[in-house]
Length: 193
Length: 54
Image (tube, rainbow over all chains, first blue to last red):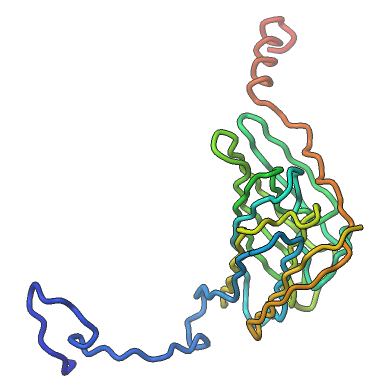
């Protein structure tokens, strides 16, 4: 039992009354499977690329990247997902499935164009990022495209063409210069295993 | 080629910086020709009606 002040029905509960002691939490002590924020970005000026560097997926487990992207231009833009600074598109394969009303489409391309944002539009997304046991970098995308009565779903998966020893850098690069508008937000989490 | 803005976040230090780089714009990949299931259903019904398929 603690030594705090007894609490009666109707009393205001305070940390003092409950004899709670707040201490600094050491994130390295969190149990495996805990979702921990690694970094976040609130875009304040239109930009083309958002790069997360200093990563170590071998130590961290998995990554989860969530965000909303506003397109600053009237042209539709793709956001390319690159690992470890490798911006050679043919070093990636991407499969997609999308549905817009009763229209569906699917295909595979030899490039990492991953998130799509309509001209002057907005998209929100979850991307899960993995390095497999044999070293391929995989990513899954769940994306809401368009708005209101035009809402559409975009599902994409990505694999590198070759293996990587780690993932230390993740880049999202718009195909249209500075299309990632001010107001876009990105949050990167790690999921320890 | 255009000068483009890049936000770089070093997650080890938490520091963010802005760089500028030469960016070659590309057009977004055109979407594949979609399949409309409503149209497909109508086509199947029509083909059945015509006796082309059972």
